Amino acid sequence: MADVRERAAPLVRFVRLHREPVVVQALRSAAAATVAYVIALRLSPEAAPLTAPLTALLVVQVTLYATLTNGVRRVNSVVAGVLVAIAFSLLVGLTWWSLALLIIASLAVGHLVRVDEYVPEVAISAMLVLGVTTVGDTAWARVLETLIGAVVGLGCNLLLPPPVWVEEAGESIEQMARRVRQLMLRIGEEAARRTPAEQAAARLHEARRLDHDIVEVDAALRQAEDSLRLNPRVREGLLHRVVLRTGLDTLEICTVVLRVLARTLTDLAKEREPEPLFPQETGEVLERLLSEIADAVVSFAVLVTTHVSLNADAAEARLTAELRQAAASRDKLAQLLLERLQHDARQWQLHGAVLTEVNRILDELDTEHRSRRLLEELDRVSGEQRARMPRLTRLRERLGVQEDLWRSRTGIGGPFR
Image 1 (cartoon, rainbow, N blue to C red):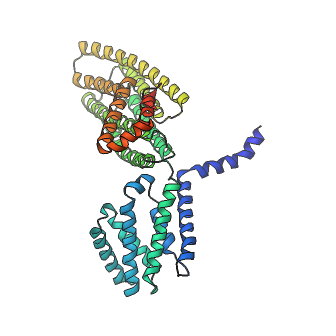
Image 2: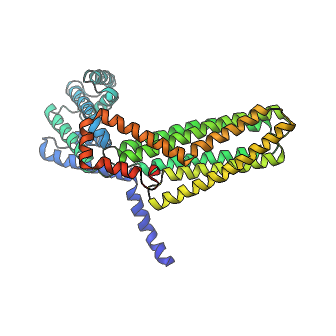
Image 3: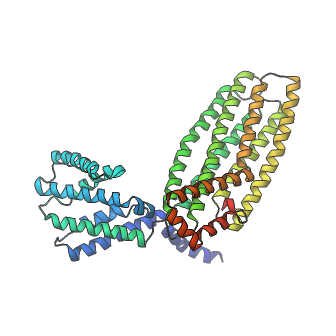
């Protein structure tokens, strides 16, 4: 049996490799460029019609949603850039000064044809095309090749939808949650013993650096959201987008509160140095509480990125148990802090702040709070869609798509699927 697994391992890696979105996108780009080149060989009088595959390569990089919503502007920018390059190739060719004029002219043309955020692509397309059109070729051949490439690129996006980047976004969210967990564990360990102010300040800086990680995860999630929109391979794309987005919002709030908690402990370390932050029993309870919350953060991330019903149920049950255990530790910590206050009222504001910040994280991770938040967001997004596209909404309702969405929303564990 082990020999069979060893022999099958290369095949498994090969299949997984070909299912990777990056590999799929590369294959789509190569296929579109090749098809455009083959068609251009038959229709264009040029011996090497490279403008067609170049245009197809630029156009096929767009997601299906971008193709249907912004594709016209993008194709216009490519066509405009190609036309500018053709004019320069016929008149002056490629030199250092013509390249400067080409960029200026391309940017000006981009603003004239109103391609908005794709203005730089006019200059990029012009520079790329000028490199293969330095010979005085006929302009009509290049225009024909450009149209062939644009049509093939758009057709490839419609017939072969771009890859879905949901798994990559989910992995980014889970990795972010694990980084939050590691930092929370270190903060808990240090809070249970004598902590120098410099060491507590170092943890505060680590918490601040989590903001940069959130930005990277947000970029990955935006890419996933675009790949879900109007993608025929994805069912309930709206539900997936809202689940991931609200999950990241919750994780971001937890990182903000963790940063505030680190700031509170830093101030407490400065006030109590060289004494410990807390008495031994209180510190041990706080360490255990932060460890339980850290595990709950990871379970929450796993839950919002899980789409298989059985795994989602297990993740939800695990999160509920961890939150229940953390709430018990929170109550014990509150009792110990109250007893401490009765004997020593020094820094009571900071002790109360620690308890408040812990409560805030637990409240954000609470499953009932999460369900209400998700339902509110679904209602908001659905309302915006109905206001923006009333005819499409009525058509979806007639076809029963809207009912399926609401049924999935209210099913078992629905808000987390």
